[in-house]
Every structure is written in structure tokens, then in C-alpha cells.
Amino acid sequence: MKALIFAAGLGERMRPLTDRTPKPLLEVGGKPLIAWHLEKLAAMGVREVVINTSWLAGQFPQALGDGAHWGLRLHYSYEGPSPLETGGGMHHALTLLRDESVPDAPFIAVNGDIWTDHDFTALPDEPDGDAHLVLVDNPSQHPDGDFALGADGRLAVDGEPRLTFAGIGLYRPSLLDDWKQVVGAAGGSDQQPPRFKLAPLLRAAMSRGRVSGEHHRGRWTDVGTPHRLAELDERLRAGR
Image 1 (tube, one colour):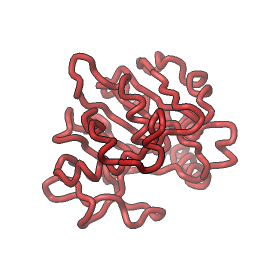
Image 2: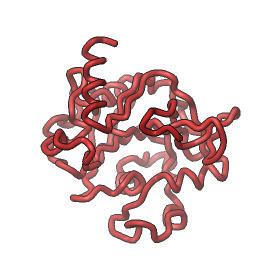
Image 3: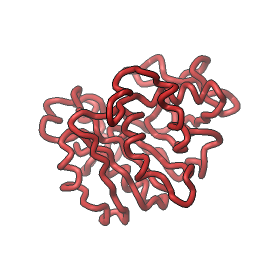
């Protein structure tokens, strides 16, 4: 199985820390945020990881090299000076993520600006549908959540209880097959390369019952502000 780490964001809410350093390369607990993900992916047997880049893109190969340190092979998917959003970024990296022998083999995708104790090995081998998402309790900065997790393990746009998408998911390439029809002319979908969000595709797949989910009740942090970064760093260094 291959994996994608979203690392192309501008990190605007993290300035001035991200003026010179991309957010996934900011350190917590003595190592870059993205390194925590690389360790988890290597431990579960992933051998090829695609990292999408834009802002300060040249710093990623300088810091991470070819991935040999983790027993991985890293590929860098450069999106240009402006990030392509989650959907556009995944679409742009798809040629690197596809398995030539099994074209619709699933891959893992993880946001590069989160930290979690979620055990990636607990993810299913394949999604029962187009995608499988990890959800967490709603944090204070996102009290309304994103999706509803049903008793049958299916996700829906509406319903209760609503939980927050953790930025960890298992996807089939076919989720992107009808992206033009789903996204339409919104945003930069008509640009080359196209720029669009992944959420509309997930909502469309949910309406067809094609997205499952799980509730992670452990530790998770969306490192969206310097304050949350400092709090996380303090906890990790204290071994909490």
C-alpha cells in the first residue's frame, strides 16, 4: 500500500513560524510533525509515500531526503506556487499513488499538520466502498463537527452524533473518477492543473453509502495555531 501526506498548505494561521518553515516541518516532541507520520507508515509496512508540496517546497527533500532513514521511498508531488487544495492535490499525485497491477488499490492519505496516537495498522486493508475516514471528538475550534457516524459504520453528511474528520483516511482512486461532474466549475476546477476540495466528492460518495468511518477516541491535535503547536510540544516532551 502507498500513502499520501498533504503538505502543500501555506500555513497562514501559523505565521510567523511558517514564514521560513513549512508547517509539516515544524518540530514537536523533538522531530518534525511529518516525521511522526512517516514513522507510523513505515511501521505498518508502507514503503512508498507521496508528499505533495507547494509553499517552501525545496525544504522537504532537504529535511527528509529520499526516505531511506525510515525505510521508505519518498516521492514529491510539486503543485506550483499555489496549493491545489485536497482534491486537486490528490488528483495531481494520483499517477504516483496508483498501483499499476491493481489500478483501484487503496492508498492512505494523512494531513501533514496533525498529530495523533492513532494506530495506522488498525485501518482496514481496503475501504468498504470508496473511502474510510477516521473521526475524532469535536475540538473546541470546530464544535459542530463534519460528518455523522451511523451505527452501521457508514458516514453521512447529516445526522447525529456529528464528529470531526481527523485528516486520516483510506481512499480508492475511483473516488476521483467523476470529480469534474461533482465539483463542476467551482473554484479552480477549470484550471490546469485543477484546484478543488475533496469534501464535495466525499459528500457525494456518502450519499451513495460508499464511505465508512471509525471513531478514534485517543489523542489528536490539529496543529492550526502557534499556541496549539506549543501545547502539543510541551505535552510530548513531558511524556504525557
